[in-house]
Image (cartoon, rainbow, N blue to C red; front, side, top):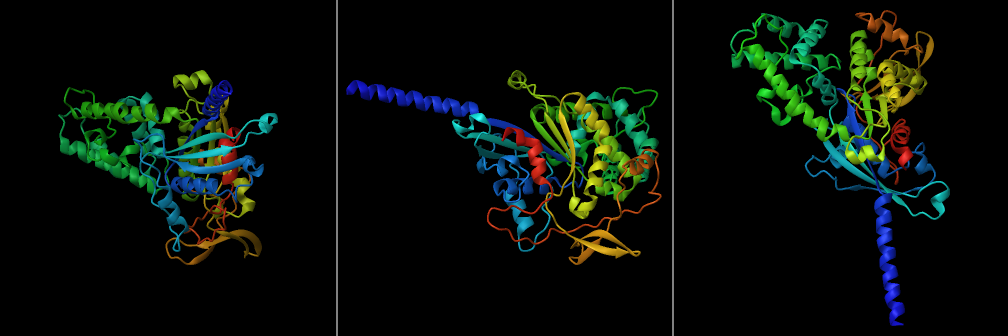
Length: 471
């Protein structure tokens, strides 16, 4: 009996150790990068994403949920204790309170971990126990992503290309006049260097307000604790015939190089290079509303986005060595709730065409990419109205500026995306045969049933594409 008890105890220990080891190997961790260019709604997206994964009543297109295999989802302490935590609770309270409001946008990198308890599917499901998927959501500004292109540009090349691009922007006139008046061969004067950097920053802020997307260097608008430091005190200047030591041009070059090595490269090494899946949020409707120049600027920016990625399929060896590759990239046109659902296919087609160059690069390298239109939080209801004797699809919401209800028909998006992209590429000043309007709506007051997340459009389809294969 003593021997039997001893062997039973050993057997239980072995079984327990086996279960622990099995559980360790069955656990999977994915890092989902979430970024978006100016005003794309990144903070709202992450908040609505987490809320709808914790309460999945509005997620029918998430297959694991429809099959009843997701047993539980809960928030976990994030693995990287050196990063700020995404303030999910505060943002959710802002969106769902008695007086709902848009949350403050995130101005730096942050992280949040969700853990899924999932029953496996397929032939092995009957005898395998549930497994765990840890989803690490990494939130970072889209401007930081565009900065990665600077790693391959010298100060001279960057200055030349930036000044040429600014020539096409009316809001850059003041900075261009200052830059042309500078003599970079003269000895460094810190007051003049600071004035040039401040004028360049103001130029970037004006470009953002005008709906432009290429706003590099990104830390100029989101400086954080680098505000006022020499690493952010440079600007593009024409190269003089002579660039002696201690000259203004040489100092600008030194600070630009420091920005690349001390700011951009650590972000790539410590955060971006570890991403497995990526969603890029794009305000396509906002660019269309701003006009052809904004659409072309967005097309160029998104074509450059994938130059920062190393797309392709992960292998266990590559992951072990840290040479991870982004496997899936979703380009999502936000604010689909500003359109009647009849126009959603046109918005998706325009987004796909707008990003065709970027998509082809990723597809060629093996990454799965997709374009989609979605609304992280639905703020409108659909109606039909009569305009010029014709019935048109419209939406009704609460105006952000006045708090009053308003009906919006933004104009009919063309079924053929070339009708927008061609004049944009040709440098047209305005749309010739259409007028596109856009209103800013406040979040609607909502009443949630138990088990429901906030209302959305296609958020479940986005999650299925990004992580459905791991659930």
